[in-house]
Length: 211
Image 1 (cartoon, helix red, strand yellow):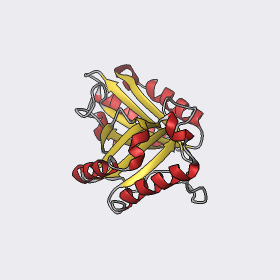
Image 2 (cartoon, rainbow, N blue to C red; image 1 turned 60 degrees about the vertical axis):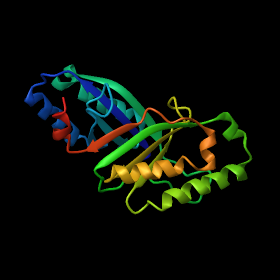
Image 3 (cartoon, rainbow, N blue to C red; image 1 turned 90 degrees about the vertical axis):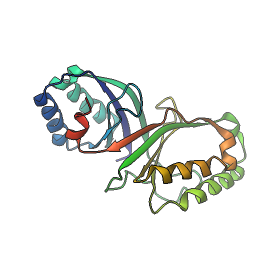
Image 4 (cartoon, rainbow, N blue to C red; image 1 turned 180 degrees about the vertical axis):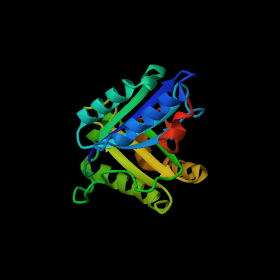
């Protein structure tokens, strides 16, 4: 299922327990969308929890979120940020099939952010770009046993070019990875890589208790 959307919700206090339960049941009922819930309260202003939705077509996500907002809990919610992207084979390794989804067993934490390269990057010769990406990947490979990555393409369908998400159990180790990646040559061609959302994975019912 190639389409992914990270949907961040802000809320107002006072939502009834039954409304939260009905919301969670509606998520469990939806078979067309693979959904994971994350708490974001305290990590980013204007957001309490996030739903990561993965499905085969973008309009399915729209219908699903419409139905969620039409539940009683929807009156207490506001969508504060969204990221939409899709999986595809890398232009630097086109023979390797893309990862279609995040790992089956989620880690404790998820860090997700949009990412855009500069115009200068896209105008570089292909071999130069490929060599820099290879060096970038080599840094990440040293952490592959404990940190997993999902790369999505947003060219033409969202404000950014990519969505990058990492899952890990140790934020300190992830920070070390990011610090090492900052020292690679390809970093010169980063236009933007914010906002960064740090999220804690938990069952839907627990995430809704962040409201």
